[in-house]
Amino acid sequence: MSFLFIAADYPESPGCYLMKDSGGRILYVGKSKSLRSRLRSYFNKNQANKRLRQLVSEIASIEIVLVNNEAESLMLENNLIKIHKPPFNRALKRDNSGYAYLQLTSDRLPRLDVYYRDRRQKKQIRLPETMQRLGPFKSAAFRDALLSFVTEHYSLRTCKTLPKQVCLQYHIGKCSGVCEGKISEQEYLENTRQAAKLLENGGQGLIERLYAQMELYAEKMEFEKAQHLLFNIRVLERTADKQIVDREAVIDQDVLYFGETHVMLAKVQEGMLRDFQLLALEGTADTASCDRFLMQRYAGEKPNEIIVNEIADLNKVRSTLNRRGKKQLIITQPKRGLKYELLKLCKNNYDYRMERMKLEPLLKKA
Figure (cartoon, rainbow, N blue to C red):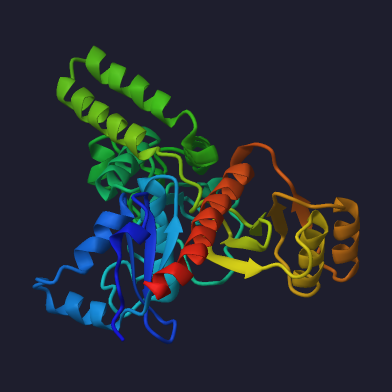
């Protein structure tokens, strides 16, 4: 039986969609600022693309993940494609593709380089002070321009292998010449520490520094450089859209939004949103059902932290779960901040899925 697509069943909101076959295998992951419009384009009867026609013929269901904005849909799509590697996705499957960070390398004399996070389920290494990351960047062109700016501003080396003599970069004033002892290693490492400060905390103060550099160019009547830098600043300000689906973190979190009959569970591993699951609650619909769910769900394996919107007896749940294992579980019920934003994202997806569940019997009758 072919998949019946009804455009009105899908929201005009930003998000990602996972197209699945009858066995639940993910065939394709996509994203859009308007999910309804994008999905409608696949089911055009006059579809000329043979590969898209093949994809549509295999679709048995479409799972929707709602997000807050376009930046989040871009980052989430990148994560999901790398995790699931769907057969109909050609782009973004490779680990070194998509949205990258800037990072100071772990060399004895570090340099600034492009870094791609490994989206597979394995632990990332906690970064030392001189390995701060900034990103991810939606624009590769701006990322590379920023790499050049920071490298030149702090006179960092660009060579992968340290040479014995200075190269052209030193002679044109873009490198400190640490390879030949033009500055001491201690001075060079101080430069890298300053660069690390620029990259830490998500690049706070970065735009201010870029504006200061732009003004310096203007004072020197280097107007072309000033204009170019202003363009890059504008790009950075636009790309700074708030996004919470791909962050730098060293812990795993489960985010749980409890409704009356179900709970929406979002798995966040090392800052990367990986999955949403709608699970039924057992027993009566009260706050105690939340506690029962938590104590059953996390009796064995558990993340570092769970973030919840409801809990009846926090002390009881915490002491019970921490008594059952060596790994101490943090339980958080936030009222503001990033964790609260994750809960709101869970609620949005909960409301959407529950509404779909109510409509399904009516759709079958129709």
